[in-house]
Length: 132
Image (tube, rainbow, N blue to C red; front, side, top):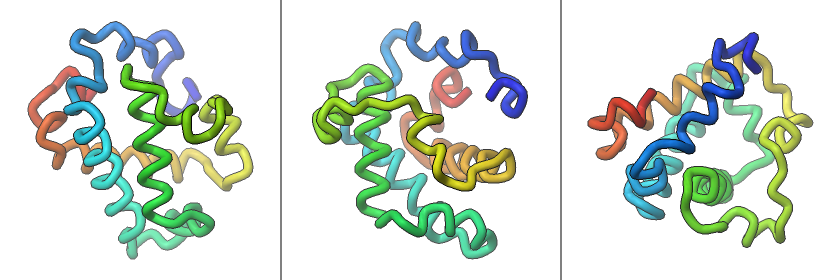
């Protein structure tokens, strides 16, 4: 991951030290749900990149939003919504996505959609520390 992203594991863990935490900065559960909705609205309407949308072919938009929302809530300091839904199967992100055709091109497109979603989100658009 470091090779493709330029971010070390230690750098990726900095979000855990932010106060208030990312969950609260996003606006709690409502703000986190909004971020996931903004993101997946972009993903599922990415008509210029059908190869990217095809990665999500086995997902329904509503389910994708809910899974990411729950994952983000738990990861960013909120309640354990993800493990509550998945029955305690809180797997590492890479393992969860190993069966999908995700390479650096796909990862880059994912990040582009997330940056756009964050730019539109009322909390992240004004919180420079949270955006980057």
